[in-house]
Image: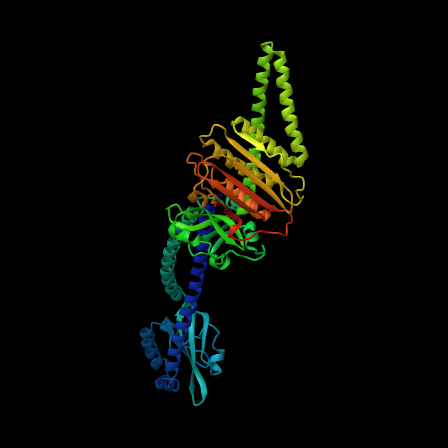
Length: 541
């Protein structure tokens, strides 16, 4: 059975039960009140008659009924009583609505307390049927000489109760019908509010959402239109430094995370992407998106946070992989060309030239490889440089490694990935510069040395150079003089971050139209950190 049907049936049954209870309760209250009212009225009439002097005087006459009967009947008709019976001490009637019963004994057996001097209200059955009676003693000279009984039939009382009950029933029926209509509207509204989903589906979706939120490596925080937190995952707790057992839901976002600007998104309804935010001294990239309902009204906003350093590290790793792949591809292409050359010489029968070509290539390759293995023994750095040499050959660029280079004394605690990032991005930048140059001989040189307390990396090119305006912006992320490459503008920025992490500094010298020299110095001792605005500067005179 669907939730909509269950709600309708449940509310309907509840309303019917409540209506039935109210009906019986009202009937009981009305019957009790009516009996109390009629009984009190009967008693009051009985006491009034018992205290009438002519009634008391009639008891001392020879024929009391002749004087009492007319008075009793007159009063009975005025008050609407079913009967007014006056009897003596022996319960012999002196008055009765039916004159034939005058002189007979009273019926009901409820006069005992009255003859003791009490006025009572009782229910008993007389000659006219079950009735509600008010009884009062007739006292003369301090003695009880008779009794007055004023009664109303129970059937008359029930008729009055039934009339009132019909009115209550009609009122209750109208309330029930209105309540059933309200129940139908409530169930339909609930159905719309939960998009027609069943409780099991809602529970499953809640568990699914919770699992998704906790599986996301980013911090997630959502707020409502009042700026109160509605959703927060464990990663967000960790980023904010708040234990998971502390409830953040319901708190204002401003009290949990200052300068989040998430509430601004609620007001503007505009999404914001890749915005930097500082949390506990660390830089995070935030995406803020408004939440809309079906009527396109903003009902909240959600933000995701990711540590910028993690993204930078990932970008560096991807850059390294890309550089390795390009190097291998270039090397494969270069050796493929040489094999085609060798194949052509053999097909032409130029065996001596083929042998000389092989010997020359082996000497050059072996000499260069032996030089790298001796002076740059680290396989990661040496292999990376070898790949760049192959890439340069494919690009028709002369990449030379200064024979005075030496990179043997590189401390183990210095990250090889960061060194590769620095060397690779400086070389890539130099390649781009010489490719834009009009020089026939496109030249890039690399010099590495570990002499002294610093590791020195120097890359020189004879490219287009930079003017003073460009020199002031080259380290800005995304800045590039190339208009067609969407991936440009991040190389020197990545190199700068790696230099920052290693505590080094960079200087460069560039002349427009002549070329550029970049020099990086990295301290071997991790305790030494170069600081200040001069860490990245031009040394042009």
